[in-house]
Amino acid sequence: MARASRDPRLENRTKRLKLEKGTRYYAPITTGLSLVYRRTGDGYGTWYCRIKDKVGKDTMTSIGSADDYQDADGTSVLTYVQAQEKCRALAKESKAVATGKPLTVTEAANHYMTWYREHRRAIRATENVLNAHILPEWGDVLLMDLKTKDIRKWHEKLAATPARKRSGNGEKQAYREKAITADEKRSRKSTANRILTVFKAVLNRAFRDELISDDTAWRRVKPFENADEPVTRFLTAAESTRLVNASPNDFRQLVKAALFTGARYGELSRLKAADVQLDTGMIYISAEAKSGKGRFVPLSNEGLDFFQSAIVGKPGTDYVFTRTDGEPWGYNHQVRQIKAACEQARIEPPIGFHELRHTYASLLAQAGADLLTISKLLGHADTRITSRHYAHLCDKTLANTVRTLLPSFGHQPDGKVAGLRAKQA
Image (cartoon, rainbow, N blue to C red; front, side):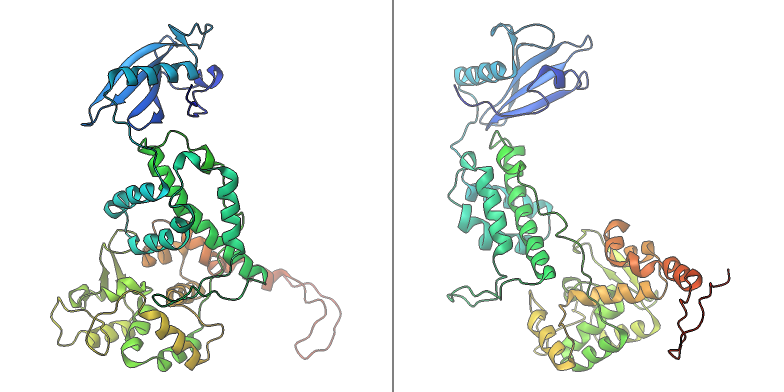
């Protein structure tokens, strides 16, 4: 007898009786084969077998009543396990089901990326995670052989392994120093969580598309808790000016643009002259942005003057920002540039280009901008992400309360100690 696929909703009658009447509930068994449960208006449940043939046509066949109110007899009244066995037998008899060979993680990853390229945007980053961290470890493993303890052990190993360094083609992979401080360890756990998320996305896509019948092995593996607390690094206005002055001419343009707009590196590298709208004082970030939605970003007077100078003499189809050789800025071209500029400007610790986006938002927050405004400027889908990073900077009420109501405890600005006094309301 084949092992039954798990489904907490359908495995026992108590849980089944809480399901909505008239709704079909699907439990994938194997590729092209699913068990279906449906309660009628009078409350009695029925099992169905759904078979998808090799040309994609679905066939739904009633195979018996569920043992919701009477004991199963294995023939007309079936338990969840018996219903699966009967569905398997029906599929074997029909010879129509589009069953396939057991799937490896590599094959599941290829299936996932086919879907991902049509529906998501961070294609290269996802491929890098797969090729660097997932496929070398799991590529040849069958999905049906995955074990919770093995995935959990791998996840913990990721968090304990030092961060990778950039290495040239053919060079042995180099690593940074082992994480020692609490923040460094938190960062490694956060990275491990992101890699786990990609791995589970691959496996869940295979499960949803009925390429595997059971998702228990990876569903039990949970991410590290409290690992993704945001540590927002941003520059002061003075540090920002130093960084601009320390940057080479071509890269300086990108740094200024990021500080004036809060746009991502990829958004700025794709920006065309036609996207700079001098009459409205805005730039348009196209729908190729990370969110998949375009947005308009208003400019300050200085920002408008900067962009006006940047597009002088350029046709609308030209890139606003190019490298010294006239070529567009490409993937990761900013990494070494920002590192060198930070060293020259004595920015410690050094920042990545994305921290210029944080700087834009943080300086606005400290100047009194509300979270909703900042969220719209950054192109966030809602204020939850914005709040995680900038809420503490926006909340002036807390600071004003402390300054107004807390006693002086006898402290004098000149260092003398006076008698305790309470501040007047």
